[in-house]
Length: 334
Length: 256
Image (cartoon, rainbow over the protein chains, first blue to last red):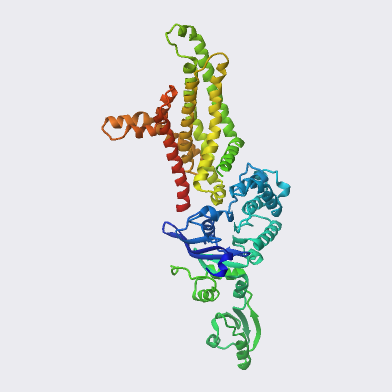
């Protein structure tokens, strides 16, 4: 064991889940350290929920290994589950209970000693801003409050690992901000995995991000890495006297060039090189009449679409470069 | 942990109008039956007195009341148990239990105990009716004890079967129908199918048929006979269906 492994809250190695012949998740690796917020990103049906169900022991992986704080989830499910708090897509709320009763039940089910239950419930309610609705029936609460009760349920037993499946879905913007602040706060003392398809959310709260597509990890990096990935990979230049497109393609470090007409070109760079300076020098020397050069601001959305839709060569080059932290996914995609 | 779940189930039962409705209807049926039999008994009491060893009030009033209660449970238990797993799945609240550090066995046993406490309440009410007669006459306490035991065992096997049925579907109503069908099938099987198949030379041991025949086990106890066989068979049936329900929950985790 490496010295690092002590602070590893969850590690999943090569987990797969098959439904018949269809693989919902294939050879997925995932690691979260203490005090880290990991965002699972992906289009609908990418396998986010399945992954979370496996991590929480709701679904048995077809293959692979999951350890929570070093405890094997398959061998010692009870000990491992005691360290996990899970908010599924649909919060598992008993509508006929009031908030305090429900949280007390959740605390007891998670083996919080009876003597500490009241404190734990009070603390969870205070953290999630539920104190004023403590005596209200859950069925009578608004969607936003129900979502908060769902989060409170996941943190009431102070788990090491908190797993939140789309925690901000259906909330209004103020509530979303509240919940994000809460997740950030939780991320300091616990480890958090959250799934979402809202990219700003990932930027706002996550330390690291893994993008899933067709049940495989297609991107895994820190948020800084994601920003890096989105920045400086393309540049648009406008030339009064453009040379032949092949000349541009021949410049060192340029991977593709698209002619957008009117002397404008979209130039993509190969990974880890920035040929902008060379480009400008050439333009000056050969008098191409360079009058505009814009680093194209690809938004996170572009990156996302790029990774999950465009399955061409350019993408895979980008992928492999920024995939430092990802282990290669099992077999090649069909 | 089991009792946390049992308490939660009891609470869920008592917050739903269905449980109260079942309690009310059962009480009306049983109360009417009890009073009717008591009335009949009082009318023929003078004739009975002429017999050499006349049957007592426990035999003539209490025993049939318990038999009626057995028939009523056949309808009531599927209705009470139908929501226990089916509705948790439909409302997706099962995730709370499955994500908590609790084993599947604890979940099922907890739910079973919760249901049994509720059924115990019905049985106690059934028992209370003949007990009121103690004010005016002497009761056969031995017979009352075996009758209560018989009803308890019957309720346990019904509860286990209904709980299993509830684990098969996400529709509470379908679960109720399913368990009702299962229970009826078992009654018929024990009463007729087992015997007639054996008469045709099928090698079905009588003991096996008896395990699946809750009402046949009810008879000896209902007559005051403390038959160990009639006690073990329903317990086996209960255990078998609880294990099936546990395996069913586990299977959902494995197969999704």
